[in-house]
Length: 418
Image 1: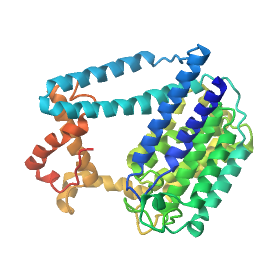
Image 2: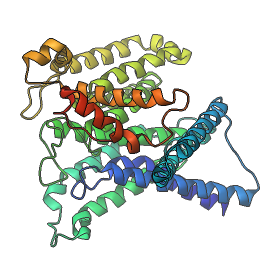
Image 3: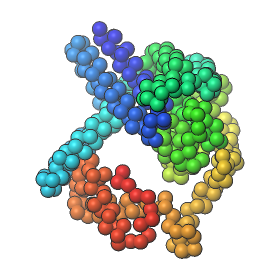
Image 4: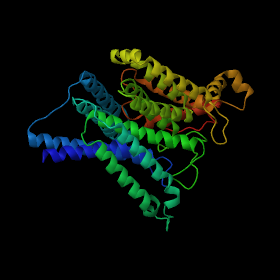
């Protein structure tokens, strides 16, 4: 029974790593991440249930110990205290909303941060060697991607405007079922290497889809998705979410490239790296460009990475050259003329003289400035505990309103509490 629970838990983890980032219903909502986050939360709690049941049957509770256990508990304790202070420190009128928001953010924190962290630590306890098949993952990626290219021609036209007809397609359903079966077989040992390869393969699919969108190719929906212009959103609904996801995977691909044992593996993981990079560039998200540089720079703190770097200088030089060429020679997409250098030069619009000479305030900067001003004002009220854990979105409008009235420069901005 315990072994069956272990396999069920692995199945939930595979779904979390594979289905949650890629499965989305754009026809129902502009923000597919609501569905993705709900699915991830549910799967994490199901994993916890399997672990508790299995530990109870075996009478053995294996809780991974990490150097971050005490900081975790301390931070969660501060969050709890700040939430309680916020609850009792505000008028009775606000308390139901404070409780609701605090409880929601609390569940989100446990599911998306605490459980995810400790599942990673638990999987990392394995001492298995890397036996993952590069050829198996390559074959899966090629076959599954090719079958999705056929989707526009084989999809079913919805017969009614009902929800079921809008989210279910027979061919798409078969593709998803086949994809889950394939990645289940590829991760059958449940080792860290299997899950790392699963995450990188999923990221490759998301990155590739984003690149196609950047160049105006849409293979899932009957119309082009452009909520942010030419900026790639892939399955995430927002270029910032796509690029942040890939920033986490980029150094992982770099490490696998450095530790690859054959030319075949180096080409495979090098392709991962360049695809992630191209999709991050296609997102036109400047903060993620800085994040990618910082993430790669952190690899320099690892003695193993430094040693692998010295042993693979020629291969690293080739990959680095291709990466630089990709950055500076990446073509414009769709109807946009924006490039990496153009996106960087755009920052000069932050300067006051640019605002006076141009059409108005540079929204990407002043929207953030408004948020920071409001948060600073919240912090001034209680520098030690802040406004309260989880209630930023609840109270933000009360601070934004006076700033909109007091400063003309903020009034034309698109503003929202979240």
